Length: 444
Image 1 (cartoon, rainbow, N blue to C red):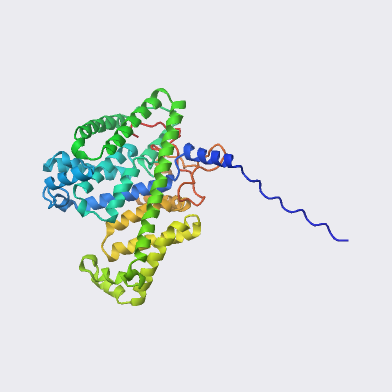
Image 2 (cartoon, rainbow, N blue to C red):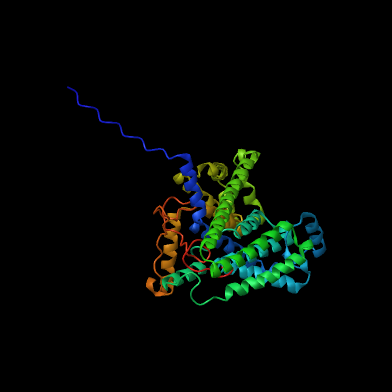
């Protein structure tokens, strides 16, 4: 008599399509995804732009100012044709140029620190576009990336973690303050009023400032922040929830565009390289290593170029990584390996070819795909190093440890773009986050 066969394991129930769509809609509307990724992108690009502005400070007048070879009249004629946005067309005086350059530096510093990130990101965008569009022939690939990401940052809630906004919100939460309670902050309303005055001036000078859509974007952002403050003060119920949903949708859409932009950059670069004969025979890197303009370390460049096998491996490896990366986004381990390879590649470009700003911009763009668990670990290590440097214990800051926020299903809400399913939540009560319990200030 044979033993009875075990009953086959029942297949997992298939989730209906409408339920999956409802879950996806709830995900993109209930929270801003990728909080740690967007924070590292904010830090990376503000640091890149700040590094560039400080490094070129002695040459600022020749690059973007009144002493440059690209004169004010030539810039005005070009902008009248291509409609690029720049406030430097308001005046050709040195004082106005110094004001714009100083505001660009200040905005980069404040965005790096995460102080009123929503408002400062707009000033950061205006400064970056104004200087780059003043002398368009000075830019390279890194400047183009900064150009695009500065626009995306105005829609991304990039201050949820690792920012002064998040720190201020955490302190209010620790004091148990409710929505709109506590001592009102004047920095947000004052900043909103000042920016409104500049926006009126930008509209007045719109015929020489740039395309109409950039002025519409600025007005929408300015009016939106004013509406947010009014709702928070006088209607913190359902109207606040509606604004949170709209802000989360804008954040997640801009984040998706940023990720697609990075994939497009690498895909086009890789496929164009395939068509080049020098990349096909593996000798493409030999030539820039012998150009004086791209050899800050001649001995190191000569040592690398003297090895034909190394040049061939680096040439082929560059093409393979760039072409393959967009196809590995859904393969976590392979994606992480290629991500490290691309970051090391850009670090090598900064060292061997003397293009640090370009490399920093690309590494900051690549950071949108970093896994959440790694970023959480990195943030903890950085906080520990800061405490050791300041010789204080972790409890000296007076802030409670962050806990992962949970959605209605009881799942952690920190699985953002590029995450690998690990890590804590993004601190939804951050000064630039949505749906948190801490109050938001105007232009916060």
